[in-house]
Length: 129
View 1 (cartoon, rainbow, N blue to C red):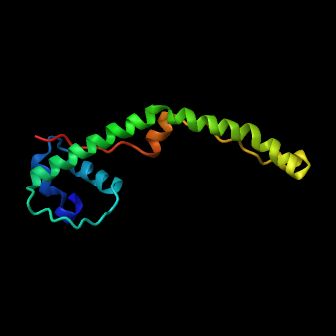
View 2 (tube, rainbow, N blue to C red):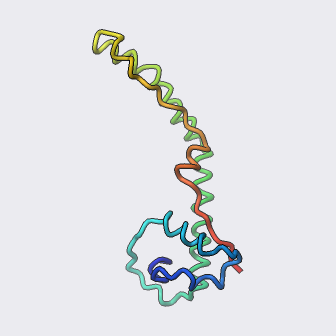
View 3 (cartoon, helix red, strand yellow):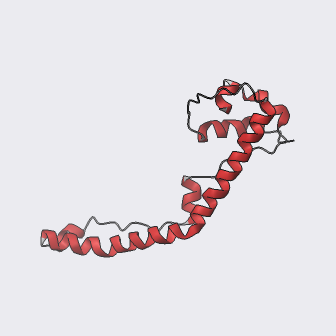
């Protein structure tokens, strides 16, 4: 909705943002967020209230994403990856009847919170006046 509202002119929201590097903040958000068409009219919202609603939504997203990553999902995924690394070579060698098929096997690396944060970073949100 923010992208549609400003039509690519993010400067329109700059007066409500504390940071002086607002162009890079909005450019990053523009890259991070998918382009989704909204059918709801937003003409009842002011720029300030639309930006505030967006930032509050982004904060909720960041909080929920952090909670999800901290929920133990990384451990569950790593358990499955360890089982794969342990069992797949054995199953493949048995299926082909030779250990020669294992020469190219590369075990899956274990995942970390840092990996999730680098691949799926939190939204960079501006601070508002």
